[in-house]
Image 1 (cartoon, rainbow, N blue to C red):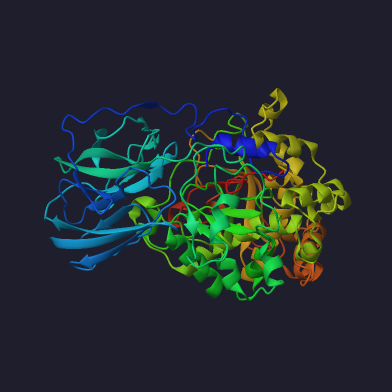
Image 2: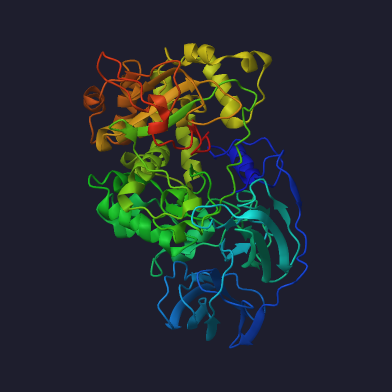
Amino acid sequence: MQRSTFFLLALVIAGCGGSNSDSNTDIPPDTPTSPMTRCSEQSSPQLLSRDGIRLYQQSQYLANQQSSVVATLSDGQSRGYQFQWQQTSGTPLTLTVTDNPVLPFVASSSGDYGFQVTIENAEHQYSTTVNISVADGDGLSVRQDHQAVEGANVSLRLDRRNGSAVQNIGWCIAYGPDVTLDLDDAEVPLFTAPQVNSDSLLIVRATGTINGVPLSDDVSLLITDEAAITSSYFDTAVARTHSYRADSPWREVLQRCVYSNQLTSSCTLNTLPLIGQETAEDASDTTAIMNRVLVSHDWMGQNFEAFLNNLDPHSDFAKLLQSVTAIVISDDVRPSFYWVVTGAIYLDPEELWLTAAQRDTINEAPDYRAAYGENLQFLVPWRYVKNNDYASIYRSPALRQSRSLAEVEPDLASLLYHELAHANDYFPRSIHGSLQGPTLLDEYNRRSANKALGSDQLTQTLPLQSAEMQSLAGVRFLGDSATATETSYLPADVAGFFSPDSANDFYNYSTSREDAAMLFEEAMMSYRLGIQRDVAITDKPAVVSSSTVTVSWGQRGRIAEPAVQPRAAMIIDYLMPELDGAAIEAALPPPVAMRTGESWLANLVLSSGKNTPQLVSPMKVPEQPLRLSGDRHPAVQ
């Protein structure tokens, strides 16, 4: 989602966001952009029109190179239609995306291949076949050919060859409309899809050299014409999505109620109730949950369903999901968030991919908040750990690795505990039977005015104390301007503000809602999965990484700190009353202090005893990217 959308959401009661910018781009203001030049040799895609369908084929297909076939309707207007591809002949291919106008694939061998595409809505159905020939050859490979709505953020990624970067990288337009490119990272160009009057093909060419040999690849993008934006909620481009379950009884209302830039008012509870109102809180009924899933690609729903069926042994997430209207998983959601106006949670699919091909479909446009607080002199990193190691394994997108469902668990579980804490803070299962509506926003306004939310009760009973941390959080997470005093704070100053207080993370201070969600997230991760959270105050060197920042203060498992325990216990009891918050907190491992003066990476290995362990060389510890407080969630007001 683009930053102007989140800014608007922040102005709505209990919306998500925090940007103070009027810009319609996620590209930081100091990122160089320039119009993409035209290639000296233009591409000539093969256009075939038949059976009411317009097909685009590449001028050539090479084995082991990212390829595609593109389809749209002959009149160039495909919105409102569902696409389905299947292979009809040739060596079987791994087809990750079959529900899109663009069918991406990589043929591992030369030969002839056939495909069938079906395009349909409630009134019409079109179907045709296409055959292609793949030749042996050598070239670059750009991920990935896909469809993008006009005005959307688009990212591409140039494959490395055996882990080595391509040299002398260049980009140009080989066919179609003009675009302006952000080449801050030459391997991952970013741009905004141009406005079009009908579905239009855009071909972007990457050139480069490998071992001195010049190579190239053309990547095909179908820019689709969309209806004029009329929503004051989703006021910028949103990806095309569809009900994950084709037979869902909520199929016709899901998109227009929770992810449409035609949304002009909140849907009523009669139109789209909370899941718990439909199922009478039968948490074992994952069918009801999956009927509420809206996706941009089917694999997202498949992986989410597998997670619920295999990695939710206590039904925590099934129970917590009773308090949402829908689950939106889309390639343009970044970061994840919950929004009371729709009652839905919106998940970044970065936490769900299992294969490199699935990851290829996710937009890599950066988080719009990346530049907030740049003039502050400290950082607050965090990570989840287990047995003195990272709880999750970092997989660089450049290496094209796969991962197991079990590897997804730490990141996805912590994300769900957090976002679903918001939903249950606003509408706990205990009140589902008494909701008056007519909309959730109406219900929220009444509850908020009466200070009836769990986060309200937490703030009234056990409030945070540090005014300095509260103000700094406004700078770092909401885009407020820093005062001269705030820009002068050193890490030791910030540690002095934070460590005596009763928050478990810097992000708690952004809003009272985030305070509750952070407490619940960390407590449940430790209780259910035995995974502890690290948090620290560090310096901010010119080159920031896990091995270069120095810890001024830090703790592992701060959720068990005596000052934090009663606050965490209170919110656990509110969000999941079937649990005993005080007993859970009392059983958690005691917090462990980090070693000051050492790097964040060196502090990965900590001793819970009195003896300081032998210093571990950072060269012997696998370094992961530094994660900073609040990087996964926009602040819920």
